[in-house]
Image 1 (tube, rainbow, N blue to C red):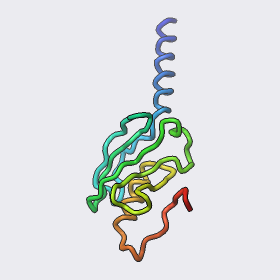
Image 2 (cartoon, rainbow, N blue to C red):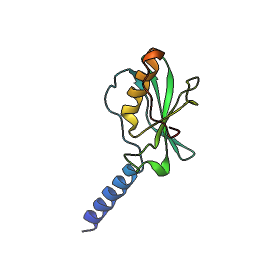
Image 3 (spheres, helix red, strand yellow):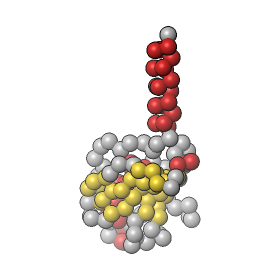
Image 4 (cartoon, helix red, strand yellow):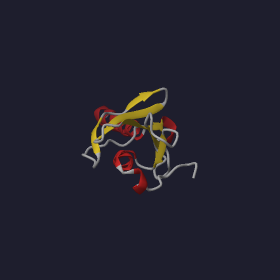
Length: 118
């Protein structure tokens, strides 16, 4: 009986810890050359990535906002890119592809990106 309680406790702790992390990105994304793993620093989850065009950026989310799925909580920071270097998204994995597509388009064909400022 103690073994079953231990196993159930372990599974509960693991599932609770998994909910405290952003979703894992497990596939290739169009326009994305490579991406790293999530790391937590000062209560901000960060995942670096590189676009096919060579632009380096990171997807970020505050630890307290990880569970707010469906809202513009994830943001991409890319030094040297307009829009005050910050772009907001509702899903981190697809955001990399959308951002990389945006920065690879000729400026006259650029669609508006979602921003909390708009």
